[in-house]
Image (tube, rainbow, N blue to C red; front, side, top):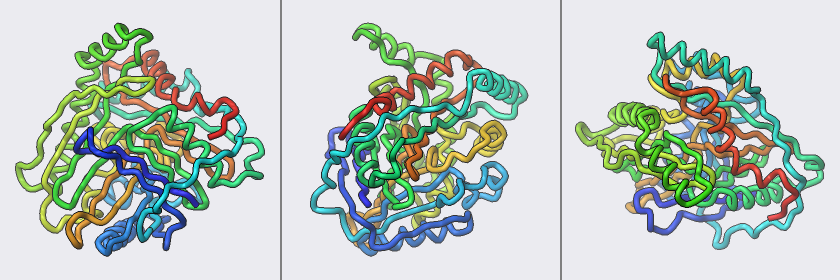
Length: 394
């Protein structure tokens, strides 16, 4: 079992990355039902307070653990997959796992959603927005693939090889390979969910997308057009407002601020727009309280959150799983007995299980969204997977 953490420094762009490797965990904390999730998060907090490192995830369907109103807004979890899973480690390894030299077969992705059905669902979302049911829906669908001959390959080695290729296609961001033994989560997410040091908390929702230009001039024009687009700015500010409200549930009064709005971030295939929302958390707030206030991240639900999630369940017939949940690390803080938690939003994330791969793709749909443009945005967002469509070795 190999686990790799390679996260950007959330508060300082020029600071060193949080990059560590981990071997097999000392113990595992897992929840298979919503009622078990809070206890897992409390155990994670206690372990970090004792100087241990916990690396793992929450599935999107864990939302039912934090609010009874979410119980009918999400599917049951994926069969056999935990809603929450964390490996507990004494410390990171002295050296990262060695790069894999494994030769792996080409990956041929299949879309679970066809264009005609996509257009029907976009029309349904537009009708819901027109009726005042919601303002924005983050609509997604999975891609799937099977690796021929994967049964003969070591799953951990296979995951290392795939993860290395994904990181080359989409470097930076909040990347992690988490190996639970049963399944391997390979995330090259560019989106921070939250960073919390026990006092300060930062969230950085990512909403607003534009394809990169083919020339430097076209590229700069695309970034500027996105930055000035009423549609992209509206999509972003809706989620900023949602997260301001979510953070207020755990924040010191009047401490919720938006120090940066409409920042443009360059990714290999797309430009993305982010904004920062920060706060001071109240005394006595625990990790479970942070998740209860924020989970799932509004950038992958829409607004208002509960109604958006109900419509998502209507339109998406399958659970999302780790995709759109949270993946990260809870580690000892700088002061004794303190913790530091950093989680991404696991978009641009591939799950490997028994030789089968899955990866979700989606976008935020607002009243001004056009089906043809959103469909093209989905194609651009999948670009990081193209390197797996060829025979590769790490």
